[in-house]
Length: 134
Image 1: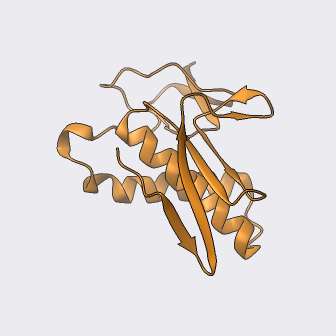
Image 2 (image 1 turned 30 degrees about the horizontal axis):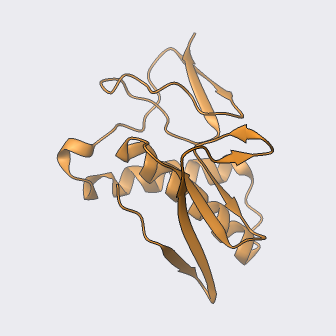
């Protein structure tokens, strides 16, 4: 999925890059927002739905920081997920990846990326959440 090279949030210009193995605090992740660098970094090679969700999540993180909204991380996760779902139809039909939690799934926080889910299952595509069957 193609991402913009930069986005504007108010008067702030945020650079957008890709990396094979982005890390936060030496832990692999799907992406991150660096306020100090004015940078959103997204992992290369993710499925389009996960790329979209990770980008939107990090964009909401950037908006939260640059505007001092004071959103809690759980609110950022919800906004990112719901905005991603709303934008999903913009992807080519072959690129669709569901962004829902399957029944009987327990959500746990993770410092690293999850295994690629079965493309026929519904899952949360959040850079900070791992889901596993209960």
